[in-house]
Amino acid sequence: MALRFEVLGRFNRARAAQLTLPHFVCQTPLFMPVGTQGTIKGLTTDQLEEIGCQIILGNTYHLALRPTSELIDELGGLHKFMNWPRALLTDSGGFQMVSLLHLADITEKGVTFQSPVDGKPMLLTPEESIQIQNRIGADIIMALDDVVKTTITGPRIEEAMYRTLRWIDRCIAAHKRPHDQNLFGIVQGGLDPVLRDICVRGLVDRNLPGYAIGGLAGGEDKDSFWRVVAQCTATLPEDKPRYVMGVGYPLDIVVCSALGADMYDCVYPTRTARFGTALVPEGVLKLKHRAMAEDTRPIDPTCACMVCKNYTRAYIHSLVTKDAMGSQLLSFHNLYYMMQLSKNLHSSIVQGKFPEFVCNFLQKMFPKGDIPEWVCNAMEVAEIDISSCCAPFRYIQATKVQSNLNEDEIQAV
Image (cartoon, rainbow, N blue to C red; front, side):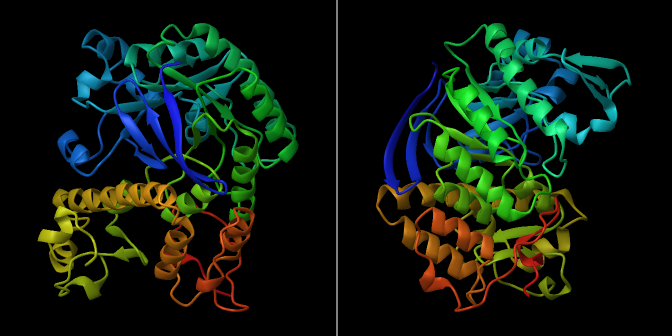
């Protein structure tokens, strides 16, 4: 295996670890920004290093279409191509089964996509996915899985889970660079605990370098979300990294880390930046609001990033959605926030201060003590006492997760 995973500290289920990859030594828990085509929109690789980014995620499907994996390989691999010295992770292309379903046809052989570039059919098999990722050269590569939205019920969920297990063997057989690339398997099974358990056990039997929890953050209610994470982290190996795919809300990351997860990725911090929204300890700050027009404060007075040191809310308000500089500044700030969150999660666990960190985080986000009930339930399972930051008898009902839902849009009842 081309990685080493060393747990440095624990608090009940939460753990802080050192993840040694071919291109970088990472500290977990960690958040990975999504650079779909080898770039984080608006930021240079030097800036990403400056803010402490450890791993960037690239998209196999999009890179295979443009500029093509053959060209990337010819030019020395994605690290050299995009001038990124630290770690990379590539997804398998499986998520496009959900996001581009109107363009895809799924069979046992693989997934046939209608190319959004030229309309021609493109067959992505488990073997082809791995071959593309071998050419791209990321430190971590993902097995092709059969992805189904968690809101779907019935036999399709079971079919996808068993197909995912069949495909992992094809991925393992196709993987030609196991000594410098780490193949992670992906746990599927929807919201069915029996199917999830079968998938976890099947993947663990393959003794892979790491494991991902897939098929979440797609519309399921939050109570179901955390329970799947809790179930999977309780069963996955202690000595391997655990990656919850598609999770990027800070609150979700804190909860999942308390439950024993290590790695996360999502477009949320940069996508929400392009719509004029900043991440702050209290939740989110919407710079498009008229109230920001004459506000001379930084986005977050407690933040040490170059945006908060040098620019006012009023200045960014004048730019957002009108000038590229606005989204660039907000993307920088939001990713800095996520890197600091990762760093603070790691250090608080190592120092034995994780419960204090969690309570401080929740008190800032929910100053009235109206912490969502699903968070309270998850923390109880994680054995983190948050009673000091909860208002007596006051909770928020777990609400439906929508792809564009922000923390401040959760409605109290």
